[in-house]
Image 1 (cartoon, rainbow, N blue to C red):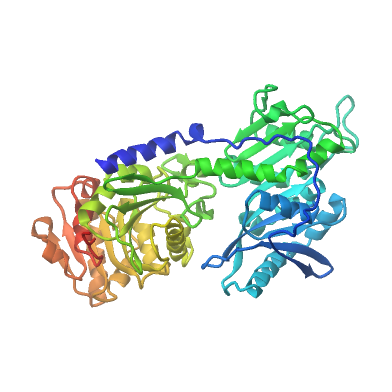
Image 2: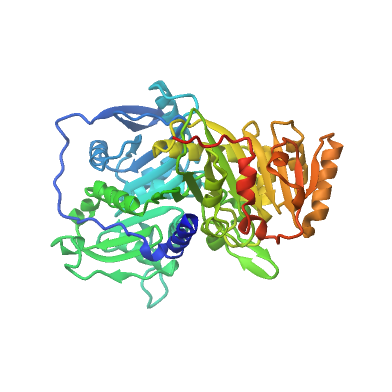
Amino acid sequence: MFARILGALCAFLIASGAQAKVLPEPPVMVKRDIAPSVKPPDGKSVTIKDGDVSFILFVPRGYRVPANGAVALRVHFHTATWFVIQEYLRAGHSEPLLVFNTGQSSAGFQQVFEDRERFGRWLSLVAGELRKQGANEQTRVSAVDISSFSAGYAAVRELLKSGEYFRLIRSIILCDSMYAGMEQQPAEGETPRLIREHLDPWLPFCREAVRGRKTFVFTHSGVPPMKSATGGTCAREIIHILDLPVYDVTPGSTPASSDQDHPLKTRTDAGNFHVWGYGGINGDAHLTHARHLGDIWMALDKADLANKPRWTSSDNGSLILRPFANAPYPYASRALGYDRDGKHYPADRHYSDSTIGIFIPAGFKPGPETDFVLYFHGHLNHVAKSIEDADLPGQIVKSGVNAILLVVQGPYESPDSDDGRLQHEPGAFAALMNEVAAFLKSEGRISTERIGRIVLSSHSGGYQVTSFILHHGGMNDHITDTLLLDSSYGALEWIAGWAAGGRSRRLVSIYTAHLAEENAELMALLDKAGCAYQNLEETQVTNDILRRRVPTFISTKTLRHWDVISKVDTLADWLRTSALEQRRKS
């Protein structure tokens, strides 16, 4: 019952997420005097040179590179370094910060980054400096959050032209920081228009933000266009291209709209795409946006905290549904979606969900290593539905194993067995497991990031990712059991190869009549490898038989395809007889 309630709750949250999402609150752009602090900033500033160009790296006191070496770097273009550091600390941020200035013109920023390899060198130099300060050899910049003021936009625009940098950049904040050229000779009777090529580099990132996969925030003043299009003109054009609405903000309806000099006047919010238009048409209005950089950071952080997935608990255990960077999707293999039987399954609906469901049973005992059970769903399914329909948490509880359940989102409600990153990238499964373990340790749910034994289980179309994990997932030394629930359609050679690796590995496959031929093929592959197995009718199966560490095939005449996971406690029985340790009673 607990699992069904949680599954229904998760399904509701996913279905209603767009409506329930807390939007960041645009900050009040009050006039603000600033000055360098008398006290030095709480951290270490280092000047790093790249040829004839240099930048400042600031590392807040107490920052430590994570054990996996992955560094999230904040980067700001075009504001006094002392002020950016001051705002950064005021916002409570603790990651390394890179600050770069070059004169006053956008041409200067553009010229620096027309060297496509420069930013990559800077990231390597940052990692090298962190190693000098004691970080481990695995240290590298794995994610970048960018902000800019005024002319600094030109640096950001150049970076977005690189696919490599585009993937690294998670968020962009533009503080009245976008300009574009205007046509010099418009058609007779027409007003000058933006030069579209100057906006094009921004559009892919903005579209990803609308979909919720990146974050884009653009605050602009009312400074009118002169020789070039200023922030408000650029904002309106981008919003028009994206076909999004612009909402007028009623004066006095929010704190930001109540400011006398620079009131919030318009806003557009879609996914993680936010454009906020403020009043003010002079230089002071323009400068005010830079002077509230810390407030913009804090507005985003506050909304992120409010929208952060939370654990749901009962007497039976705790569950969370949460996105992970190393989940199967989004991934290039389905960037254009998928076509089957005359129907198109677009990427933004079916291949953008990076959810992993995590269930920890009550009585779980953290130890020097953590054991996991993985479940991969089949076609036309998703995490919350799998959890509910198959009562997966209930089966974990009944099994008694001292392990954590991970339910991995594959293609979302699509008739497809491709599993993105986990299928196509060698070592991707190890990266996902390490990311999950680091998250659980940070949440205080486990005491170590060390991974112990792993059981893989799949239903139906989940066979393919299971096979590829066994082929090149990077964790075969940890995988003790592979459990196929009417899930042996293909890619059988890697399943057989893994199963033939010794008695430390157990393969169990239950199959209905429609997969009899494929299971016979799998048995033939084991015969060829000289690996003994047992082939049984369901009436012959006992727990003692299941405990034998040999491949076991079970033919069912009474269960239908979905029944093998939803109508009986097959998974619970198989886990109970697996290599996983049973939970000890207090």
